[in-house]
Length: 302
Image (tube, rainbow, N blue to C red):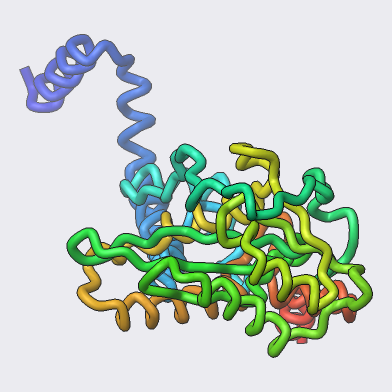
């Protein structure tokens, strides 16, 4: 028996064991070079995905990666991004539902306002529906910081935020002061600020300040987090993406990380529902009609 015949017998025997046809084996063998090329291309594309995922140190899902690549001039199908993330074991942060937590129960001397907003988050334009809330941030050895934010329901911009090491009333009031220092808002009660029924928002001092600034006040129904869903969603995604909070030792480090994240969120965290823009970009887009990706495309054509 010749060496060729012997090799043929071995191949036939191995194909029978593997339960594949000889023609299938030869087709697989002939395509080895193509597979190697595809593997090399997958690896190169995954490096782009990984760079987008790691950009500025905040975790991202496939949508955020897709939009980050778009804004750098690279185009990649979202299904391909998901496939390569699965292939190379890159996991996305996935939000888990948390029970709604109230800061404190309002007592009798605290006024409760009706739910004027009624989940009509985008019924009007920019800076007319403002959402506010407070969240806990755990860092170091179970130390706590508290973050107060005001979000524009239409553009998703974080218009003002204040970090505090305690739940004293002042830092909630500071967020309102910061809002009016940095932004021009509609007067004559044409803008609405919506919150939960937490003690900070039912407090007379807060309500007097809001009244003086000619803002209408609206509150979620008791124990119903869906009435302030966009604000709750922001906190959930932020905590998913701030993966290194537990490793911080000091309040000052938390402040630095929050400042960096807010800058990233407003200017470079692209959102699918905002025409793939970051919140500040989207606000500019609806004001001027110039989409940032359109200008980028025109530059590439030139």
